Amino acid sequence: MSFVPGSHRGPFRDLPREVAILTVVSFTVALGFGIVAPDIPEFARQFGVSATAAASVISAFALMRVVGALPAGRLVDRFGQHAVMAAGIAVVAVSSVLAGFSRSFVQLIALRGAGGLGSAMFSVSAQTLLLVSVPGGQRGRASGLYSGGFLLGGISGPAVGGLVAAWSLRAPFIIYGCLLIVPAAIAALVLADAPRRPVADPRSAWPFAAIAGALRSRAYRAAASANLADGFAAMGVRSAIVPLFVRDILHRSAFWTGIGFVVFAALNAATLMPGGWAADALGRRPVIVAGCTVSAGGMVMLAFLPGLSGYLVALAVSGLGSGLLDVAPSAMIGDILAGGAGTLVASFQMAGDAGTVTGPVAAGYLVDTSSYAAAFELAAAVLGLAAVLGLFAPETRSRKAGDDPG
Image (cartoon, rainbow, N blue to C red; front, side, top):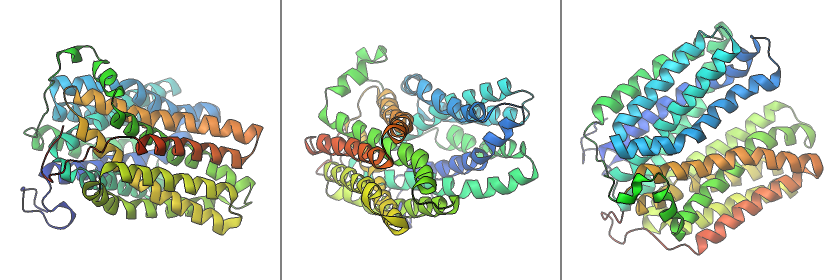
């Protein structure tokens, strides 16, 4: 594949070279994370801790991603996207290799927390670079390809990780760290001449100035709310509650949980490129509203459609809606970026992480106190509220395909 602008074939045709490069990087990072993720709880249990403590290793990574997002945004605005991306990937790589040699539970959880900080640096810098490198008329497609890299890597990784973990529980961490050498080198060397949007607003010396200004924008509120709602429903409720729903209500084995997740991922992947084209051709707002509405419909179906077939249809519909929400909100954020771009992207990602963190807690409470249907209805309500905010947001897509309204 050629990365020379204007020489692309297939889905990268006419897109800046940074899109193809970042898609490859996102695939590699997600592949490595997928290799190590299934291994973490079992590896932690080797230190004689409880199941809850073992699960906290995963939470430590996610928590430090949230904590590190805004500082990462400031670093991006100060030093540039490629430098922060290379440093972030390097932090994840080194911490992962060291975690593989952990001699205590404290060492493991500390190193995974450090990896979460590096992950925040990578994700904020990579998405900022993607959005500032692509003209407004191409941001939907670019976001779809970038998300597709993550999705494909995330699907492929666990299969490889399961085979490696059967040989050694320490090996996935070391393989993950070594695998990240390639994207770190790409970020440091190949992307060194990528576009960088400078900090234009002097008030951005205050870390929250860019966010305070963005919150006055209906477009930003709509995009961030859609990202939060998608995190709440697709990542939070689906990942945490659906496996219990399959066991307790459908009385099926974990095999059917896996089948449902495959259906969701397949429809999600199938929607990314059409959703990106729609966001570029029709506008961000209608795709955001459609994504929230379709996802909400999937949650309602989970609540009311009976049996195994209803469960699979509901997850298919949810996957379609989530695919739309993987492209349009980020494209809208790219349209409104100005000074403090890294900080804005960081706050946008934090909204999604907030949904992922709060979704399992809120839905789990409703399962314990009411029913599974109530949990799915709550997710539908959150998505419905985001759809309303999207409906009243201004359209940010430039009327000219090559324009960059940011």
